[in-house]
Image (cartoon, rainbow over all chains, first blue to last red; front, top):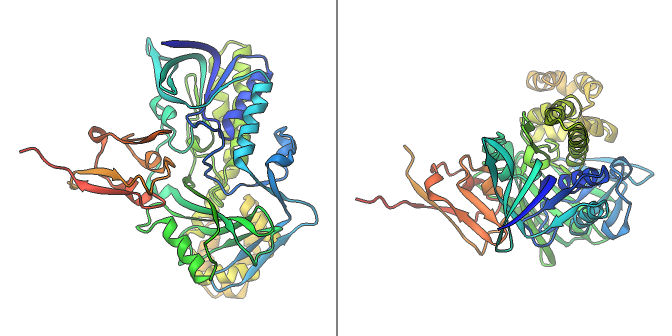
Length: 396
Length: 67
């Protein structure tokens, strides 16, 4: 039996895991990052779009090796074909190549002094005298025991280690979206914008996306409610067919489940922290979770380093507190909007996409929407509909 | 009482995305890098995993009851 000892062990080399690992290593502590995959970054479960702001904010190099394309805006389409465009003069976001990006994040962690082991699957926690003292893992077929003062479950949507450690991450099926995506050749869409289609027939409770990675190559995907009797694949293939988009040049297929219905309440139990998709820290409006994982990872690593410095594991609880006071608070507002948008009919979607401006849409997606809702409430087609008034007032 | 079932995977459709493991209330499904595993003793026959699969790779078989 191979045994190891670290100050901290991080399970999962997605987005949150490597950021936390890097930050702990930079503070001079011993840290190991493990992942069950044999190649970090693949397969991805992601549309790969992210705001340009994250590079500076989370100290990530703007390295062209993982940036497929710079994006200048977004175009939203209603069920009847009304369009709403957000367009910037400057680059507002990028479409990443996750299989390079995630690996580079892990590489930055190793350069800061951390160890990284791939094809190392966390199997269970190790308990001693009622306390969790490490994790049992398997590197290829070899069992390993990794002892650590602090354990981070950044193990994705299934959150196996978090759950085995006794953190309640469970959510009912309607709180997830099912997703299916092709990376494919596609023409006829402005390759400098991302494109989003809404509609209860198109994508129940979700949307179809085209995120360009090249002039003629894009991630084309869909998210729908996961308790839907039909599959995400069914709806995406149907949309492609109905829009006469040939799906004959497929370069990748990606599949996954996205937690979009709320966030894990207790993010810390004793010396175990849960972060990222495992903690359901995802924007419930658009289902993106990379920026959220970076933010939560930054907060978590700050308190891990403090706990190690002061040799006081009680300090870890501040991660729960700080996350809920900051990004958790913002995401709760976004969740409130999402719960209202779930109830919109196709006619409502047509109306709102017709009357809103790009700037309005951006405010709504960001959770800063009170003024936009107040303006909408004065629109004649809203004033005449008690149902629409009631829906919008739920947001105030 | 819902009918007791055994969940089976169509390996040719499955992408090992772990979605089924995520929605399972009882940790009755484990997704390893090498494959998909169903743990019958933990399954409560709720069928949540079957609906949630983005590609329809899961289905139910009636569980044979020992006489």
